[in-house]
Each structure stands twice: as structure tokens, then as C-alpha cells.
Length: 388
Image (cartoon, rainbow, N blue to C red; front, side, top):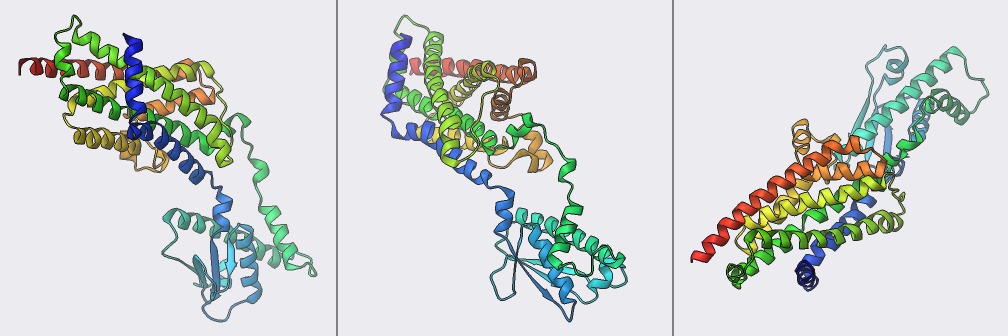
């Protein structure tokens, strides 16, 4: 009977373009879009930002040119005021004295274009601070006579950049390079997102079987509601397993190739495979709980789809958790999608079963509670149908 049930559910989903789009096309599309969005390197983002520099009154042209060179060395573009710019830097009178000796009150006034995002503005401010630090070092070296008198400005700038560089003091573990890949963030997240949307085909199937009298006729068969319920859960578990395999292949191989990102390597294959069963168990349990609560197709779409999108937002899929407000980040730690995503990342990064045990336990408890609650509600509703 299980094989026939799986075949029936597979045919229903295959003939439902909406279900196919939700279960397959939607997560793949999000994988590609988010990987492309997050794959933009910071240096590429910086190169797109142009700063215009001007003086409030008469100022030292050489210092102004020096500042422009240091801003350029940070990766930002420097344009004239009549060109298109994303930010403007106004040098106030007395800036030169304030820079080195703090004798004046002249500062730099930084204004931004309304189109520049808050994140980009913060990045520009930090890069301008770096440029000013180098300019101050340049002024000290100039004042102390550390430069040759005949040394060109560009060579002085290069010397200061070399002296100020601290790259040689930072070494990153090669094993941690995986965590820098945008694919490690986007692909597991949207793979999980797709799996949890199994709630829509499950909900629509149960509603159809209720409306066409299937659930009433089953009451006359020599099978219990428990057997029918778990048989259907196993059927959709097999469907989700196929979805898991397909999305894993697409996410781990095809999406990185299409987006020219680093290919993800499964460093702990056994944990990755095992995590798939636990995640599917939790996703199916949650889907059945929502499915038995709704009574119409409209409720299924609004409640099932809406809760999944809300969970994805709270789980850090759309906004990284590390930039969320502390209260929202705390809420995310209670989300089954967050546990599932973290478990996948642990399998990809080579974590041990001991390290992943907490997420495995949380998903097991969550899935079990959802299944028990769903079964109780399903029995209650089917009994009411049999009496009407």
C-alpha cells in the first residue's frame, strides 16, 4: 500500500504545477538569487562607490591630492563635484592644522546620496577613517623628514600604504575558508525553505479528500486512522526525500557553477545524509500539523505559506542573524528552520555527531510533538465527519 500511496501522491504533485513550482523552482530560484547577491565581494562593492572632494575655502592642494590618493587606495572612486557621485567630502578651513597638531577646528564633512544604502554608508565611513589615518601618518612622516625631498607623491603614498599594512599579522585557518563562501549561507537555507513548503501539497490533498468523501469512505475500511495517517506521512516523506536529493544536487553542484561561486564540499557525508532524515521528519510533522488545522485552500495558502515565509525571515534566511536585533536573533534560536539549516551547515563543514547532537535532538522532539498533535486533531476531525 505504501508504494501505491507514494505513486498516487507523486502523480498528484507532478500534475500540480503550483506544487512543483513551490517545491522545486522556488528554492532553486532563491538559491541562485541569494548566492549571486551575497557573492558580490566587498572590494567590488567599494569600487562602485564614488566620492567627490571639495574645499570649503582655500586649502592645501597637495594635501587634498594626497587625501584623494589614500581614498583611492581604499578602493573608493574619487570624482570631481560635477560628476556623478555617491558621497561628498567637504574639507573645512583649518583641517590641515587640526589633522596633525589639533590646533584648529576644521574637519571633513561627509554627505551621502539618498540612493546609498545604510550598510554602504557605514562601510564608506570606515574606509574614509582608514584613509585619514594614513593621511595623518603621511603628515607625521613629512613633518619628521622621513621622506626624501625628491620622492614623488605617488611613491610617498605607496610607502605609507606599505608601512600601515597589517595583512602580514593576520592568518586565517584554511579549514575555515569554507565559512567565507556565500554558497554555505544561501544554499542550505533555501534548501530547507523548499522542504518545509511540503505543507501546501499535503494541505491541499487532505482538503480534497475531505471534500470528495475519501476520508468518510476510509472509515468503512478495515484500517485505522493511525494507519492511514502514518502511511500518508511516509508517502510524503519519500516525496520529500526525492526533493532533498534533487535540491542537494542542484544546490551543491549546479548553483555554484551557474553563479561562479565556490563549490560546496560535504566534509561529513554521514552527518549530512543523517541530517536529511531528521530534517524531513521535522518538516513533514510540521506540515501535517498545519494541514490538519486548515479547512479551506485559502487557509492552506495563507497559513501554510505565510508561516513558512515568517519562519524563514526569523531564521536568518533573508537577513543574517548576526545583523539582526538581539531580540529577533534570540527568537531565531527557537525556529525549526534555523535548527535544520545549522545542522546542514555542520554536515558540510565537517562537524562531529556530538557537535550536531543538540540540533538532532531538537528536530526529533519538534517533529514528534507535531506528529502527535497532528494525529490527535486528525482523529478528532475525521470522527466528526463520520457523524455528519
